[in-house]
Image (cartoon, rainbow, N blue to C red; front, side, top):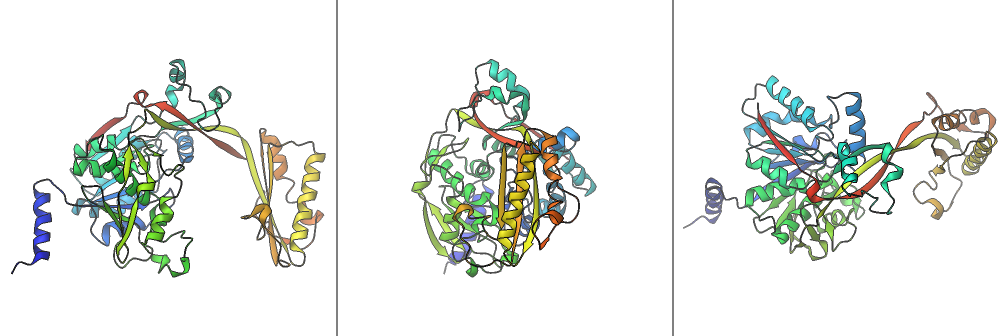
Length: 472
């Protein structure tokens, strides 16, 4: 009698031998720069995995990395990435797990050199490392403007002329294409700059299953799976606003894995024995996170229609995703730009019961009067009362005499000297304001650079990605 389970395993292995995969497992080990450091380690060691993707970049992360690179030409990438790879390198080599990450940031080449160095120290030979370049368009801004590429703010319509001289970074969102090329050249580690988050996971699907560049439904299905993965444990019970108390073992939360099939359907899951929860509710929360128009989620690879997504729980911690429909990619790519926009500083003091809120409010009144007497003018002064209205703002209601309130005051201004003068007015409140104050320790606050965000569009044909693959 035929053992169907054994036959199924044999069939899968046979298809893989002849180059046709019936399913690939893609896990996301980082949802942002600073995420849980053990997550990638758990993903590669606690169960089967084909691809490990790690998303390190947020909208303004690139500006931070550009500043680091200006200070040191060997920096500008996610510094957490290299020690992480050092830890898991034996695992990914022995199990042939491919790593794809945008942790190359503003300096993928320097990141590659650092990874190559650690591979050399570990005695690893034959490791193929790819870098994807071409997203950094800051050196080309004047050229693009001269050729009629406006780079106006896509949200407000403002002209870039007012901030041109203050630009600190400009990176186009690349799609899956360059990563696919790197994988087809045999790369086991792919390091990119500003690649769209979901495209990191879409690339191995295209490379493994041979999806056509105009197969919009399958590409959109891959984008949806990638979007579910991209914020790490947010789809496995982290930051869950539903029955969050019922999410088991958050201390040991497992990070998400997408089991993707050639037709584009996927199953979102996690490794057995890890904490967290994969359910329709947790997946839905991630689906609607940062998507704008649900019927037109625009990426460099396609436009995905999230209203067509169908979810079905098919087992414990297993949610099937199907039915996704897509539309053609647009002729433009988004450019994430940043510019210097003055200085800011934040100061805090803590006031205790009784009448903690009244004391904090009075301290804020005194501070503002002193700033006005000094003739200081700021673009913005913002006051929050932590423990009372820092989350709810004007909707907050005082329901009792609070035990303590943290007064938090921040200013933003054009001139550094004005912001620095504000910093010097916080400490005097301790002895010249309301009583029962604490929480002032260490040095006074210092002015910090304000880096503002400028989103723009650039014609796709104006961006030329480059792929380089080297072997250790």
